[in-house]
Image 1 (spheres, helix red, strand yellow):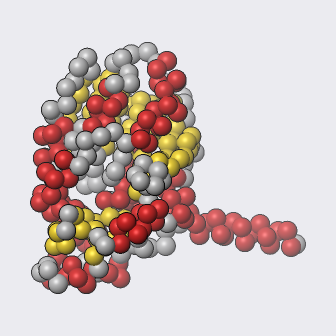
Image 2: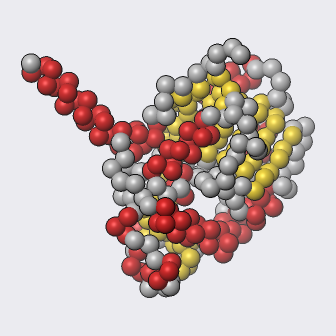
Image 3: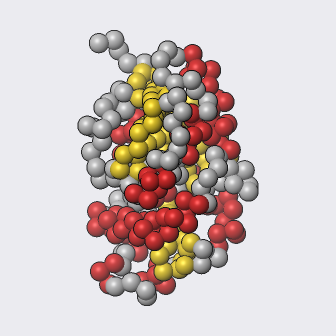
Length: 285
């Protein structure tokens, strides 16, 4: 009887970890997305200038999967979701003989920079789409990609349900055996470095009209505003998940299993957590 009770308690605890405790309302999500849009409209150029190098985590990620990707026949088909200025295209193009790459981003300025990436022997395309609100089906059919990446994006997606939905949507684009790789920015790894950049919601509200205010009671734990180069009026909205949420995000279902999980990047060497899923082989048609 006691052993059975322990199993019940353990099952309840697991369910508690897997289920989000709060669902952010659509209106709140819309306002948070508008904060991000305004940030890139105002600071996109200076942001672009600070994003020229490949991340150390990308090289580590590639070393983990290079053997199987190099063995495949034909070009590597990659969807880079939230491609920014296209620097991952440059990185990946240096690693493979043949690449069919599709970069998708919402910011027109960053896409202009991305289109200057020299294609070399590869096929590169950059398309403007909203990963959260647009239907990607016509652009990227299901089961069409060998690799899907989501680097430096999840912290801009408001609402845990939306973050999970985006990961599942991108995972559905993979062929059998394909990989989905995402980075999660861990502010808690170097919180002192960002303390001076933190902006309280009340401070930000003082600079905005009431129509732009965000209901603080509807925010997820870990939703913050960060200034950019001293500008505290047009901040970045960022979400920093705790360990319980990361575990929930990692559990995408039986057809997408975690293959690799590691930390890299930044002064600490741990600023980003990388999650790499591999899709199960699909049944023959």
